[in-house]
Length: 454
Image (cartoon, rainbow, N blue to C red; front, side, top):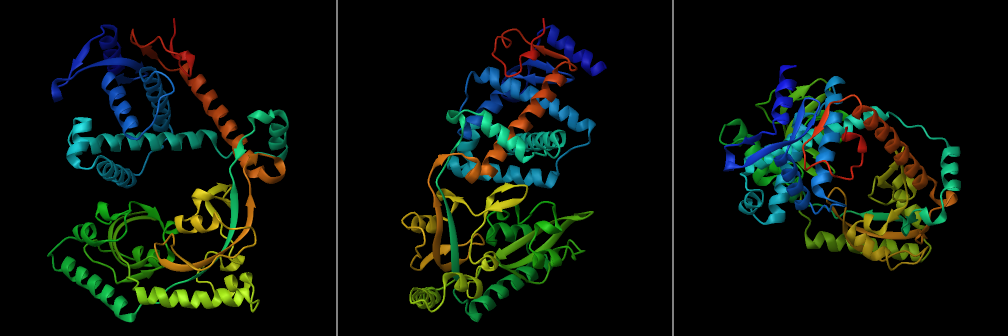
């Protein structure tokens, strides 16, 4: 109560707040419940959004404060409902953002100059932003719950929407694939394992830390810059062979035996366990494929391609019995788009830009039913393979219809229903929370007009 009274007193007196850092004069521009929004909050958010190439559909001095105010409503509710973010994941996401921003700007110095802050300050601000943004997302998911839509609701939406308002579905393709992996010489595997054993000895002897070695040598781009740290994850989020070793670790000072996965060879170090989740570091090394092995694999695929063309076997048979691609073997080579899901059900339809780059260039020139000649590509596990593909179907760009695009229409209806639930929640919350906006910040066309009360 004292805190709220003090905030309101400062606001009513329209006092400015002088911060020692950089001698910037700040001021309170909004009050939402017990929380204040400062001019500097708005400016920081504007800089971050500009850095990420986001555009404003209107006045940013109106849009940003309202976005922050809405966020504060969700954050306040999240405290009540005990919804928060895992700090390890927050740190990892912040580190990834800072590293990406440094690459985009060209150097640490340029990033510091852009924000007029030290890297440590930028990282702390980013951690706060990520923590709050992700907490808001969880709170929204909690408020919406599991939306249940019936086919009749989707049909009703389709029947009532004008043709001009129907979404345009981009061109999609359905692709079958057969891959052959080049053989890795035993000598290369032995050399990888020897390096990892040497890393283990260095850590155990205290010569160097595991995290330093990970930053220097790990070939996992997602964790190397974080010293190999993955953040807290459940067992189901990891590959089984990796999870079985990681979850059996008990001593944070020891390093695991070498673990082989489809990505390469790993050593793992425990950071912390929390219930059924674990935070661990790992170092990944990938065997190198020589030109000779690639040429040998290409020759084998050429032979298989010719056998298919000569009707000695079908493409479906080759995909089922001879392909190295474990994700498609049981489906006659048909690829499933994991980037598009509805109720956890994938789709065989890919937009061209969703295909691996090397495959997209090949498929773009193919006719339906055609089988490509062998080509080299990189898998999701970052393995070089030789592939052939068959274009099973191509659906040209068109206005959405129920027969072909039920899932796309269902997603639109779900998003609209979700937006309605959240908009209704914000409207109701506005009426129960104290809100005050400073003069000069009220004359806006707000998304939610209930902020300004006479």
